Length: 236
Image (cartoon, rainbow, N blue to C red):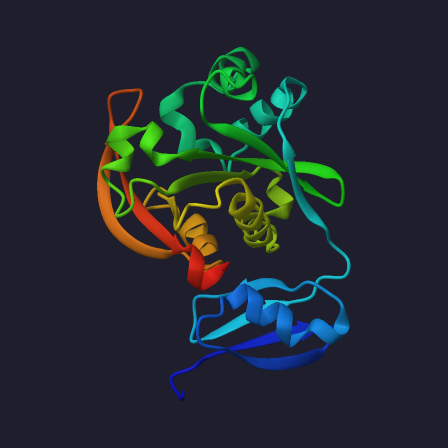
């Protein structure tokens, strides 16, 4: 490699190549590289030396604010076999328990904001974001206590491994860039055993950092991996 950051964009069997200019974000470089196509690329994998994007003509991944009417779906997703292990310390994901946990966030009583992930208009999962400074114990574990944290779930098992998590986080990044214009980094901390979640974060530009232990509601402790994304480099 020549020291520059290179990227590729796949579009219906064709591949475009580009280079990130000094001071330019990866996202901006990808848009510029395929500007003549009048399309918006999304990441495949940004963890390697070459940043790989794709133009997806068939799938639209979007986020919308969660409402209380979404809570039955949230309870169902939380009970799914591929999701349940990462929430087991929170108890049974009954509708009553899920409503008690997420209802205040939906209502705006708590600072965490909830979003439903939609694929071509169908609800398939959720994510949440929050200022780390609103959670002092958590903020102390991040290199940037002013960062915005994000957690996410793809609830439909048959859609796991289809690249939806990557595009969902990319969509969240751009939405959050407008909602939090002063923020310079984003933070997420999956369970160290959750390799799929850690890989999704890497694919959109997060870098693994400190491992730390966090007490859970049932009295046990879980080891989490702090992952940070530099906003200026990745999103711009």
